[in-house]
Length: 179
Image (cartoon, rainbow, N blue to C red; front, side, top):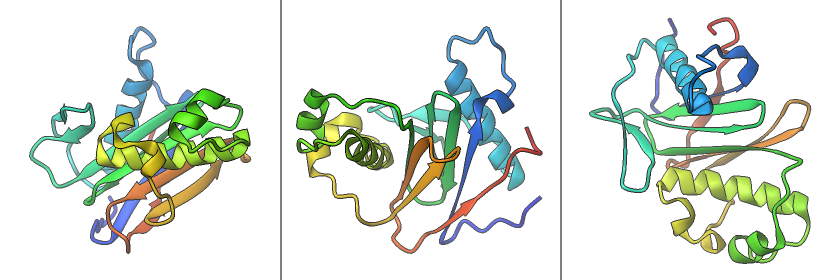
């Protein structure tokens, strides 16, 4: 067990879905896989999984806890983050196409798809931090602070993590030996 310290720290993991064993009969396979990852992360720190509830906008959180989390999934990967500050994470495959309509509506009309996707991942992570989804007004989100940008699987995926605390330290966990 790690001697964890959430003060000024957040912990994240990005893992291939094929490494997570859950019932194939699940109608919410990706959410179940993300919860397995979350549970394993918490186990590392000796924290039991509290009841997960959802706010009015659908953001999951632990009932009666000061530990915050968020997760995302895209094709082959699940990304999960925990902290004692509000956090948001998003991961997307680089081959995803962001349409012109979406770019105009949410991304201030950015033209290049690579730039669209990078911006989308950042804004999605921020909106998940706030728990407001698309209601937040993506065109008004600035993406230049409190963020960690990652490339995953030989640069096949973009991932961004936002935190509500500016001086946070980002710590990657390796769960491969725990799954």
